[in-house]
Length: 449
Image (cartoon, rainbow, N blue to C red):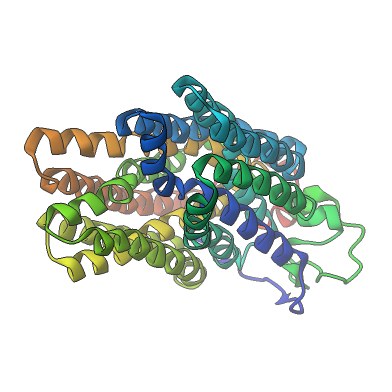
């Protein structure tokens, strides 16, 4: 899917695209690190306020749904105005949302702060960051996206333990206020380093020199000051992408896998405790998912640059099907732990493949709007998975059916990878390339196909 014959040679080690990549890593580490810390706060919030776990779960589900729905908007604005302003405004809303969570005295105040204010801020992180990184790379797109998105998993390692220590020292309210202030300062600072695409710095995609097909780009520092941004990116509009079968089939893959993705994150620890595993040992299941996620995001991106996106996506979805099968079987500690690592690897891999696949197929020019549109629907599905699992547990007094359904949903996604492969093959036979073909507005050299 990402073959590009005729490319030039890779530039020297320094290329500003890697600054953008690691800045995106930092942004996602802070944003997702705070998000994944909610489990640390939950018992303290219940004890302090008397609000039920169900009420708090509803607020978190509304938060996930909110930032997923808003991602289509922030993605489109990123394409038009650039990521710097989007991330900066998002930083203010994200930090303000968490500060308001910390000072909320009534449940409705907590709900509004989390599901509206913080959700708006969170919507300005993943899609703007991943879309921007995708614009800077072609040959190394998977590697760069793997590094950037692994920031979320790294934050999941780093921030919750810190939040736990702070909560023990100053309480959950003060900790949320502190984290809110940190979010504002860190994300505002990081936004200063984010640049929309290579053309804004007089550079070209990948920092490549030479080349014969219009993608041959000059290296960072090579003085390519005559390059306009339009030369650095190409691609379909959101409307054009949505008229293709590839868009809908690929979108359906992520819809089905993300519908089940929060099931283990919320219910794997209770499953382990139901099986007689102690609370301390059961809590390590989240660490297992985090370990797998960090490895999966990075490794899958690098591997996909070499063996192809769809082969890599099929592999990580197969891992998720296997993990859900083990969860449904209700095995012992080590089986669940290994399955947790496998699930995390698969989840991390699919997250990395998401922007890479759409950028490969539809180009970089409007990638924020395109992946934002998909995330609005597919990402929103994640908000309902934990509720579905809880309902099935209440219905059957067991997690067996819930995790079996999760495995089946990923199996559907795996089957759709085959459908997508067929769609790309047909497109290649009919159009000469397995991706969206632009109207002849620019020369074929500038399009790079």
